[in-house]
Image (tube, rainbow, N blue to C red):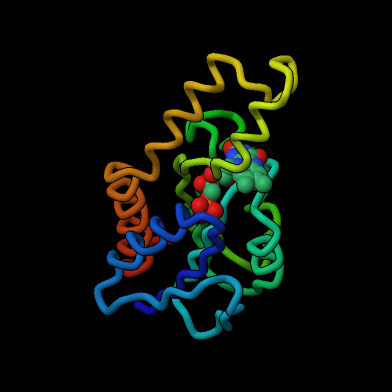
Length: 173
Ligand SMILES: Cc1cc2nc3c(=O)[nH]c(=O)nc-3n(C[C@H](O)[C@H](O)[C@H](O)COP(=O)(O)O)c2cc1C
């Protein structure tokens, strides 16, 4: 099966996940940064990866996603928040909602990714009652994010995309 993996990544987290997903496709998937705006025609699967920016897909991924028509699509993403949070679910749902109805969404994966230290420095200047001010709970989340994506995340991403590949190969979706 022919897969295209398009990823948007500012600091490399989402790129790491994209590279792990590439290994799932035996004959290799085409791995292309979103900046190259690859044509998605002729692929059995188009996997689009983004980093979460203010609760949705980052701008570059947004414009790629909104341009897709009649494709079989799977999404993957990294974010600073916990992957089992409402914020993670909402961010993925918002990205999925950008897809035109002519596309078919067959899978998704999201995990934490370390937050740009420059952004964390800005957070430290904010008062604790600000939504991004550093409280002990947020500091713990930032410390956890700093460890991701880790080996377990990459294994999980590969498992999700292996299932997608198997289902598509079997014609089950
Ligand atoms: C400008 C900016 C906005 C961000 N907004 C969010 C956000 O709304 N929610 C979140 O959980 N993480 C947010 N993050 C964290 C990134 O999504 C996270 O660090 C991601 O793994 C970065 O991926 P990349 O290395 O592929 O660029 C933001 C990061 C930046 C720099």
